[in-house]
Image 1 (cartoon, protein in one colour):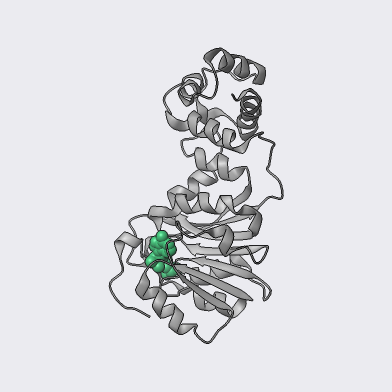
Image 2: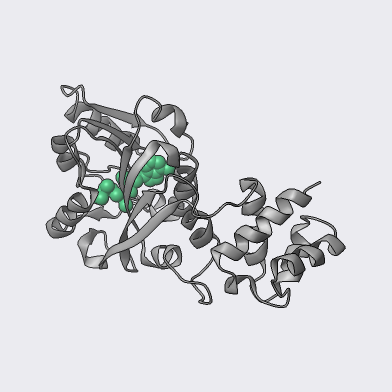
Length: 269
Ligand code: SAM
């Protein structure tokens, strides 16, 4: 495998702590019949274990030199496919189309982790479980409760479709090179149906993003700026949902966002 200096631009903080590698693999709970997607296998810290356990393994690596090394290493193993590509440009639905219940395992490059989460959200019906290493701060946001600073767009949008749990924290010394901040491993289990009915999901996303767009402004001003309906319509919807427009977006529960979204979906022009 390439020993070239890790590339900061690709978020290359390679795992070097065997105990953490074991814990991630244990948490992924790979069975011989499982199809597994690993995003950013890098120098293969997790890959060898996954290849030993899984029935099928797809690796998506954007660093051409590392992808070439992995192709060489697994050339004789028909269960392993190496895709030399940007995970944000890959057609994930197509990549995962041949099987149900994929497991996703990744120590994600931090600069694109949120974008990757949204791509995975879009293919949730193909997934059985994800175990992802994220910057701790990003993980804190995902599992936050309403009324706290960490609660935000990712909490609500991912929380609609996944049970998310922080498994453990990983300190900087477990990587080479060491990042400046702590990391966290989270597990994600997709729900068979959304946690609550939201009407049109595109509207739900607009409501949630709108509500958090200006954290210091009141909900009514945020939703006015989101232009989901007329100002009179907006006041009516807030009243129908029993939600005070003077509240801040971060005080709303998932149920309250869902109620707003259902009403806006009905009122959408
Ligand atoms: N899995 C390895 C480990 O745990 O040691 C490497 C993890 S490192 C944090 C992130 C990996 O993602 C690197 O190998 C990097 O080259 C790769 N990567 C970065 N951006 C990517 C992208 N857009 N698509 C696919 N892989 C990417």
